[in-house]
Image 1 (cartoon, helix red, strand yellow):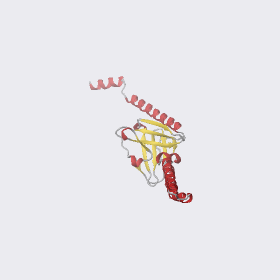
Image 2 (tube, helix red, strand yellow):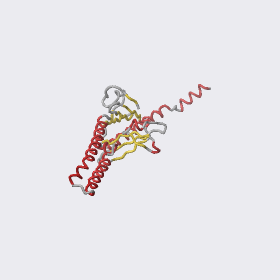
Image 3 (cartoon, helix red, strand yellow):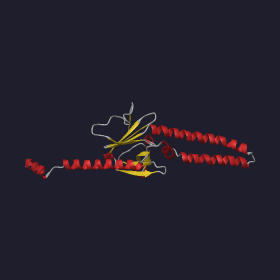
Length: 217
């Protein structure tokens, strides 16, 4: 995780090195982010119950309907303001976030006031969990090695608490999540295959071993 200054380069903190290319780029859907990160649906239900309770309590106290409705106006105004603020924050977060999958890594750039970047090479990703939501968006959580430590607060809302409370970076509330998961799986598979080929090539052949023994003798 790092901070950077200046403008993004195509949604990335810097230009990609030679040989690396972008497989997919996207951002959270702000409406889904508002529901999932700020729980605007639950907040709306809370204020709806509060408004009904205040109006009902006023009527039961013998007040007129007009007075009862007026008593609920403050709760209506407060609820509208809170949900509006959460929706605005979600829109700003989605607008300032870019998820990038290249043929070598996953990069999360985000931050409304202070841009930050999380660089996750494929070699540091153990697995990925894929989950869809009712509205059609989805999350892809990235499981990292046990020794990797990321700050939950600094990475929020692009984060989940995994097993044992371990921080897991997340491509959150993205559209067409199944397609993105397939792209990521293909990239990870190609990276593993490339690593295995490089390991095989690096291993000495029997002829090399014979030559080494002859030199040692």
